Image (tube, rainbow, N blue to C red):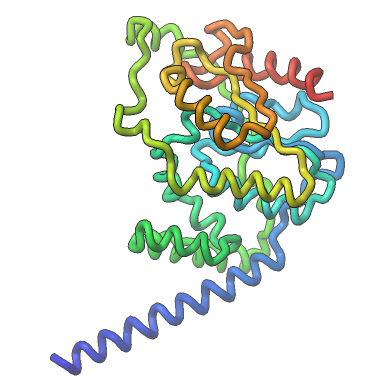
Length: 290
């Protein structure tokens, strides 16, 4: 029995030691070669989740790049932003989505969104690894292994482009608003339980890191709230949201577009614009941002 335990321990030490070496090596190579370069004329970007991803049609906005990604939380927005800033000294303005959904505790669960850990593994610092490993050690090991595999594939294929894999404008056709309102009898399905009114613990800390990063780099940070339907359940959290914003970010400019004049047919659903609504908003925003 003792010999079996020794052999098992020896095997685990070799296994984890080998994985650690591969992770450190592949992360180093990726970091040295990763390409986050934007076009030289791009000096403004927007980050966030599916809301800005489907709102800002960057083909209609001058010197602007949409790097929002559905499901993104601030943890990954921070990883993305710090790498973009390193390689794009022309960036002087960063817009980031900020609405009641982005501050609730359920955002912390997005730290485990599939593909995100493997995609951003090379750019984590020690504290990032520590948070992921201590919250859910088993999942961290599984996702880190996928990340090492992804790293080795990138190295083997000499594929270091990241800009095409970290977000972009999402073209959404059609509208489900009429059917949704009919189904819910003008009372949208509740998306959060009362217990989930608790604020996020981990993800919100990375929003503050984004703020500090922009301040340190002398970059103008602007919070934006993308348009959503007046019957969207997020309105139920407005008081809590405004209290949080004023307490923590009263000095950050906040462009609130939740009441942007939009017809039902211009929404994909109760919280996202479709392409018709996005084009209307983007043409208006183009004039605003000049």
